[in-house]
Image (cartoon, rainbow, N blue to C red; front, side, top):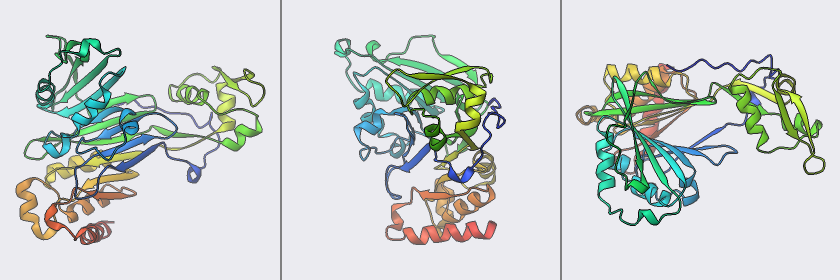
Length: 355
C-alpha cells in the first residue's frame, strides 16, 4: 500500500498555494484524433514519464531520452507502436527503462524484442536494461531484459509482489493504477505528489544562497522526513566553493512554500459501465488535470458500448463526479473528423450538469 508521507508545515511555515510553480508538466504528444501518448516532463529535472506509447515521432530525441518510466494502458497497436522508436533511441546508452502494462504485457514485449537480431550488441559500450512489470488483479510480475544478453530474460528470476494499487513509489511521487475493462484488461493511471514543495527564490537571494543541484537534495531530505537537525550544505553567491551550513528545519522554514501535491490522471479505452466508472472515479478523484478519452459521441452510445469505449457525455460525467479541477479530452474516433468542438461541448454540458 502507498505510504503516508507528511512534510510538516511546521518546518515549511510559508504556505502560498497560488504562487506554486508545477513540478509535473503534462502534454499530449498528438492531436485528439491521433495515437494516445501523454508526456509528463518534470520541471527543472532531466526526467519525464510517459503514459502510453502510440506514435511518438513528434517527440524530440532529447525528450524521449529523458523518459525513465512508461506506463502502458494495453498493447493495442495505437497504444504501443511507439515502443520501437523508444528502444531505437535508447540502444547503446547507459540507461535503465521501466515499463508497466496489463496481463499479457510481458509476452507482447518479448514478441517485439524477438523480432530483431541482436548479434552485435556485445560491441555496445554502454548497457541498456529494460525492467518490465505486468499487472494482474493479484500481483505484479517484474522481469529484467539486458541488451548485452540479447534481451533474453533469465529463467526463474522474475520478481513477484502483491498488486495493491501502487506501481511506483518514490519519496516525492507515486503512480497508482486500476485495472479497467476494455474487452481485455486495460490500465488507468494517476501520478501524484504527497505535497508540493516550492523554493522561494526571493528568500534564497536575501540569504545570498545560490540555486543548483543542492536544492534537489534539500527537497529530498524533506520528502524523506529527515530530522530537523539534519545539516544541509548550501552554496552561496560568493566565491566558487563558498558555502554555509544550516539545520534542515531552520532552512525549510525560510525558503520553502508548501501546497497540496499535484495530481495528473490518465484514462483511456475503458467501457462506460458502472464497475469501470466506480474504479475510475476512485483513482482520479480530486485530480488537478485529468486526461480522458472521448472516443464516441453520446448519440453513438451503442457503438461505444460494443467497442468498450467512453462517450463524450460519459467522460464529462466522470470528470464532474470525481471533482477534477480540469480535464482534457483525447482519442476521438476518426468518424468525427471536423466535430472536435462538438465533442468538447457535449462533454462540457455533461460536466456542468453533474457539477
